[in-house]
Image 1: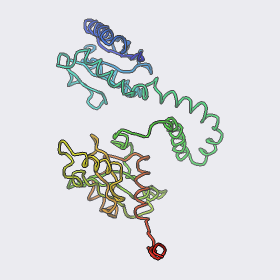
Image 2 (image 1 turned 90 degrees about the vertical axis):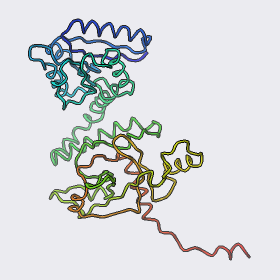
Image 3 (image 1 turned 135 degrees about the vertical axis):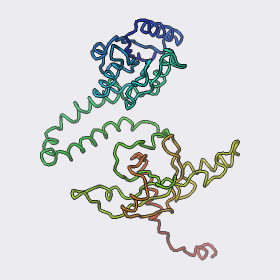
Image 4 (image 1 turned 180 degrees about the vertical axis):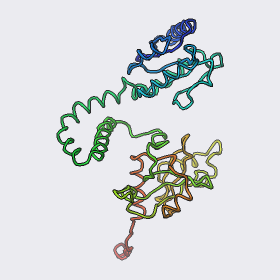
Length: 358
């Protein structure tokens, strides 16, 4: 049996609440209790505020809860300010009044196709089934393990961290963040190595700074390039200057440039094998595959197509801040292969024949 999904519904129309409750009963029956919802019903803003806590997994919010007509936005603002990480559907007769800047999974107009409560329950369960709410929600894996790290790891070491903080507060805070993330990453040590393409990128990145592995596009074209300047050179020092006056970039070649038949239907086994070899980075030492996602077109880094630009020229030619950042764990592999390619030396060939033909 799956865990229960606690769904907050903010709606002042009793008939709508009854309809939603009936829909949940039918939905659970149709799925033989493998999908269970616990409805938390709220008819006004005050009731919603009193029920909003870390136990809620998702919300359906109507905007018109009184004379004003957009009271639901107050609930949305409460969710944002309280940092409740839950999927929200705004279901209203006045969608134009919705806060468009709020990160939600849909602003839907009552009565439109696909806005029935069974449809909405499907949407919520599909999200829940990815593990997103179990990881990021208030009762999720991250919250539980952050509590454990705080209690068992950081607090016992507090005297040392206090000492560091006295010398440099901001540096210590970043170090604590790194230290905490390293503890969370330990949870993945025994996991399978196979990843989904979306894991390769941070899109959009959380920082606007150019970093090793930042993917940027030209202002006058669609070509992608990856920043390969060493991380230590890109960091801004105390004088707000970097250790380099140039930025190193590598062109990303589209997949169909290397394989013109890439999009063709019914590929032969030989061609499929060639693609598999390339995707496993066995095609050549100077190619590195980047998978396609919704945020990035994918392609192959070509280590031979390397350019160094002054920062001013880079700023004139490329769009910043970067739209996509290659994730740190994947950047390490790219840097290792890039370094290995340019570090190869070779050696003089010995005349082996004189040892064999004797």
